Amino acid sequence: MKSLLVSIVAIVLLAGCGKTQDIDLNGKWLGKGYKCWGNLDEDGQELILDEEIFISQDGDKVVATKITGDECVKAGEKTWEGRISGDWIEGVAYGRSPNSSKPEAFKTRIEIKSINLLYLDSFGPDAVIEFVRIPEGQESKESDYDLNGKWLGRGYDCFDDNGNPVILDEWVSISQTNSIVTAIKLTGDNCIGEGQITWKGQIVRNEIKGVSYGKFPYQKNANEYPVTLLIKNQNLILDKEDPSWRFERNLDN
Image 1: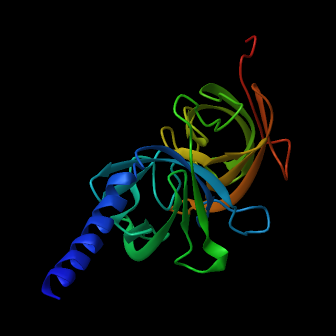
Image 2: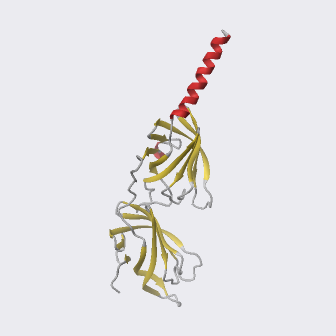
Image 3: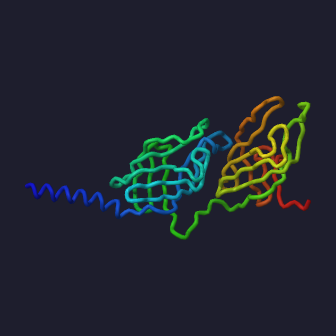
């Protein structure tokens, strides 16, 4: 009887170890279903985003790091981590609230459907994220656009030193990392100064969903407004609600 019990325990332990040893989750994955308060549609609803992550595994320990960032978890930050236990990864997922400088940790379980498919549904049916492995040598196509460079923003609404409304043409520098786009003022005004962010967002098909910044006369801090910008082509971006606010590049002058 004693030898039988030892054998059973040994089989269980070996089965558990074998599960970890048989699984190799290292590599790039695409997370389908990410949501964040910083990415809203024109109705103020959270967009459903596909974001690339990199999973590193050391034994039964697994860490997933964002390649595509957002306001909740930025590029280079951990999106989740844990330890493999059978068909599950037991650990924590991370997220940042609007007024928080650091991500918070939330207990989570991620189901290992296969070596190419993971499933996170710890936060309810409306917050499911499916992770699909990206085959080695195949890059996920984040965007068809390359918006990096110097652009002229036409139709900026602001005010002069006396508080009178003015419409200005101003230069901005747009930087793009994967699908995340940030526009910084090269020409400052009384609404947004030189070197400050004028708008930022994420490319979703042919649109940039994000926020823009501005303030009223005698107001100290800038306000944040939801914005949707249409990418007409590689050299023209328009505000969806007011096309007179536009950004152009590769200008002859």
